Length: 222
Image (cartoon, rainbow, N blue to C red):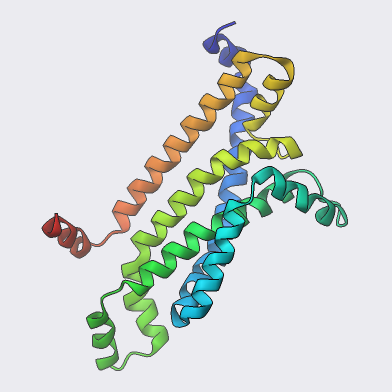
């Protein structure tokens, strides 16, 4: 059976597994954003804390996904969540922290000092400067971090099939177990296509939220 034939015979299952994969990745990136962006903003006020937080996120990123799933299994099993989507989402949230925290930190730190001084001159409080000057200018770089996290998580989520999380990794897992080449290739193709689509969508969003002034500045520099 060729790849096209495989997809024709597994059309509904492919859609279901794709939806599961998208749901796991979307939820993990959403939760990671709620955690990572505030942390990235907070550490801009303390250089020592920034180094420790970013180094910790770096350690999490370098931990092999299978090892992290294995470490989480006995801990979450106590609460009845040793296998399935819960440990997968938690692991993906942890993996997402480095690009999100680092990009948020860099984006806020790179806001031109003269704009910060102008805000101070206008009598803006720290919170108002953050809300009206720093975050709007930092959004494109923050979204770039979310883009990296989302694409990375699509690949890692495929491995989460081995702990019963579902998603497109099921095709790869079952294909390897059955020595079924078309199933393995089909799963790999769908994961790759999903990563390409998400990357393109996030790139478009990044361009849309970039202010005309920043685009003009980049054009002049180039």
